Image (cartoon, rainbow, N blue to C red; front, side, top):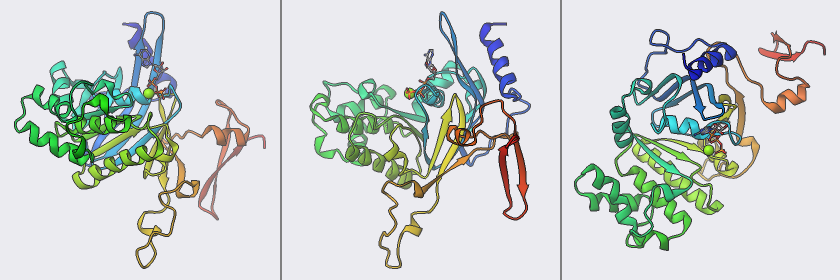
Length: 331
Ligand SMILES: Nc1ncnc2c1ncn2[C@@H]1O[C@H](COP(=O)(O)OP(=O)(O)OP(=O)(O)O)[C@@H](O)[C@H]1O
Ligand SMILES: [Mg+2]
């Protein structure tokens, strides 16, 4: 048995989960674009093995737009790379668009990357060629695929990202935000069902960051594109209905909007609530119960309770409020 295989077993032992296999993985449900259960990724380098994902669970419905947040090194890009078919999970179960990625051959991966997913990076140099014009850049992936009516389609895509007027500009003559919008058009060129964006607003200002999110929202609403955005940008995540936080390679909490957009309107249809502005009151943080009934407390709650990992807590059901209350066993 290789070191990695031993480590995978050790990870499942540590988290107390059964390793997903053909017999015990949750059946695929067509409602979901992404079903990821107990996903493990171990990077093997010359000296060390890094457990980047340790039993991560994530479900994303078809047509959802959601964000993933978490500290540097928590595994966000690793997860996105697995979802994008750029790298293979070490163990666990991962279905995207009904396909079992752990069963993929190299050829399946190639087709998947070509037809199912689109990818946008923070550093768009990975997607773009500086000396070509915007429209030539968007045509390029279609050229590789041998698609017909490339010019027409490329112009349509540039219109979707609001860049028709810059179609003949060379990439190196465009601003960072504009280049990022070209990168989005490229990611859409092959008509993906799932769009993955890793820190898409990492190097642009707030105004441009809002424009980019608006493009994602429009694509999501009008074309039913499923969108997953990894972000550090707090202002951006506040404009997204569901935000999943990951910590140490596991899903730790989930933040959902308390009120819908509709409730923020008065009888005249005017926006009264500050739905699009900052303020904690529009979101609440939820802890996620995993499939075995375990939950993870936030660092903040642990500090306030004065407890650390491994401590024992009491949990009591309060009949009056219908709540389960957690408290220190010595307090
Ligand atoms: N190719 C690799 N080889 C070895 N270790 C890696 C590799 N890629 C990532 N890691 C390690 O895996 C862990 C998760 O990294 P990842 O890039 O997913 O974090 P992240 O949440 O995207 O962080 P950031 O916010 O800084 O982008 C880190 O400890 C990182 O050092
Ligand atoms: Mg990253």
